[in-house]
Amino acid sequence: MSKQTKLWAAALALVLVGPAAADEPVADTVVATVNGTDITLGQMIALREALPAQYLSMEDQQLFDGILEQLIQQTALAQEVPEPLSPRDSLTIANQRLAYLANEALNDIADAAVTDEALQALYDEKYGKADPGTEYHAAHILVATEEEAKAIRAELDGGADFAALATEKSTGPSGPNGGDLGWFGLGMMVKPFEDAVVALKADELSDPVQTQFGWHVIKLMETRAATLPTLEETRDELAGELQQKAVEAQVTQLTETAEVTRNVEGMDPAILKNTALIDN
Image 1 (cartoon, rainbow, N blue to C red):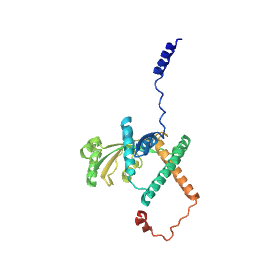
Image 2 (image 1 turned 60 degrees about the vertical axis):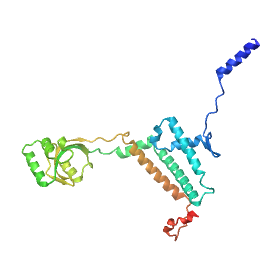
Image 3 (image 1 turned 90 degrees about the vertical axis):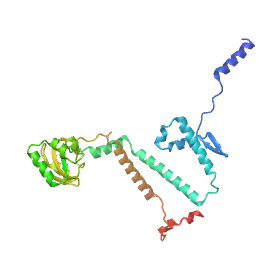
Image 4 (image 1 turned 135 degrees about the vertical axis):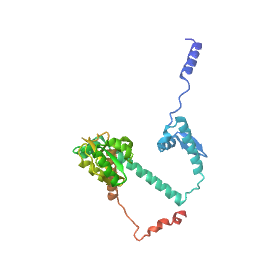
């Protein structure tokens, strides 16, 4: 290969390879400097993590620019606070740090408590032997007085159509639907209403029943066996219960085993109102 050919080959290699890639950004990568104070990529990532969910749907560039601008403004403002910090500022920052770390510990405890095995065990405990009970499909006609309710019952006994009468005379929101309340289980209706429904057989009418809403004439249309919720349907409820129990147990265990000395005997609780103590 001639000398000229070698030079052309070297030039072509440089064109194909291009400039060396810059180092990949890391948490310590400085993204801005404000009066000598660095702002890092890690700070931006941490701030994004703390944003409310609605901000995370923003376009990446818009969110990036917004976070950077916020950190620049905060840094410039923070530099206006004279050093050393006042007792109030130092104590407030210390409390915020304490709260953050405690919250992180709680999150770790809560996350560790929710496993597939723990969820299944709690589901079996709560629902494994539970009686799903009965669901009721009923309709009612709601009026203001007992006299009106008795008159409606008399009309029904005389052969009047329940749905038509409910549409015409019921003051409840179900009136336009013929009084139909759909399916419901125990505990979903006020007690006098529920007791009356449970005492009925299919297609039976109740005597007038009084609740805080007025007077009802109830028709039980049909019943069916209720079904238990599945594990997936109760996952969030079970996870919350597991997390609450785990957090309460761990907090109790940590505080009971910690070496704690309280030195507040004889201290007036009103001392907390004396803000002058941290303003000096």
